[in-house]
Length: 396
Image (cartoon, rainbow, N blue to C red):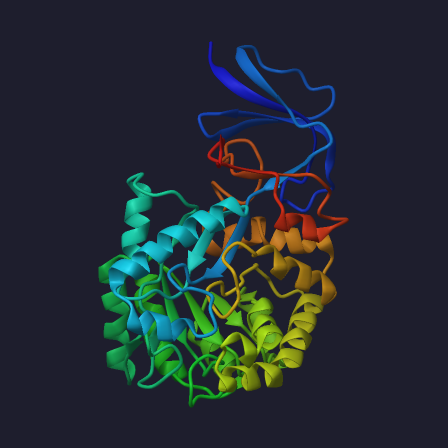
C-alpha cells in the first residue's frame, strides 16, 4: 500500500479559472497531485499523513514569464554586470533563485542572461546542487548592433547574421530564443518606440527556433516593432507598451501572448533618480507608463492571450515581489481571477509546460502556495505566502 500526504480543509483556487472549492482536500504522492478531494469524496485506501489547512487558501505556485535571474534589481543593474566577475554574478543568481522560490514563484522563464550563466544555473538546479524554481533559459538576447540590451546580448545585423545568432543560442542549449524588436528604457541612446531588428531579420530567428522545436519571445514596445515581430511569427510580445487596434487584432488572430510587465516602468518611476536609476531611464519610463497601462487595458478587453511576467531584475523590480504585477493588473481593470489565471494556467501554456504545471489537477506537479487569506479579496496576501511547496515538499 502506498503512503501519501493528505492536505485537508482549505479553500482551493486550482488555477483553471473555476470558482474556488471550499473545504477541499488534496492528495500528494511523490511530488505529484494524485487527487483533488471535494466534499463527500472518499479517500483512497493506503497509509497517509494528514496536514490540516483549515481556514487557509491553496493555489498553484506562481509562474513568472519574464525574469532576469542574474540581474540585481538596483538602480543600474547593467553597470554592476559590467564590473563584477562571472563567478559573483552566478552567486547572485543562486541567491535570487532562492528568493524567487520562497516568495511563491515555482516556475519562471529567464529572458536574458549574461555569458550563458543562466544555462549553467539551470544545470546546477537539475543536478540538485542549488535550490530554486524550475525555469526556462534564453541565453543571449538577439539584438542589432547598439540595440536594446546589447550590453549582454548577441549583436548582429542582416538576415544571415541574425540566423547565425539564433543558431548559436540553440547550440548553447536555450529553451527559448529572445529577439529585440524595438528600443527600450534601460539602454542609453535608444527610444522605446523605435523599431530595431526588421521583420525579415526576426523571421530568420523565428524559423531557426521553430525548426528546433523552440518558442520565441520579443522585447517589443513601439507599435511598428510589435507588428514586425507578430508578422515574423513570434510567440510572445514582452511589454507591448504601444498597442493599437490593428496589432491587437493581429495578436488575437495569431494566438500571440502579451506579457505586460507593468511593474517594470512603474518601479523605475517610483524610485527615480534618487534611487540611483539613470535619469534617461526615469524620463523614458515617465513618458511611456500611461500608454503601457492603456495598452494592457485594451488588450485585456479585446481578449488577447495574457501571461504574467515582471521583468524582475530591472531597477527595484525585486525577484521576490512578482505578486506586485497581479496587483497592478487588477488596478488596471483585470478581474482578480483572470490575474491569477494569467499567473498560473496561461503562463504555463505560454511556456509550454501546461501538461505538468500551472494548475492543481490530477497528475500535475504538486507546486502550490498556502495563503492566510483569499487573494481574490486581497491580492496583497500573495506577497506574504505562509508556506510554499515545490514538488510536494515544503520550502524552508
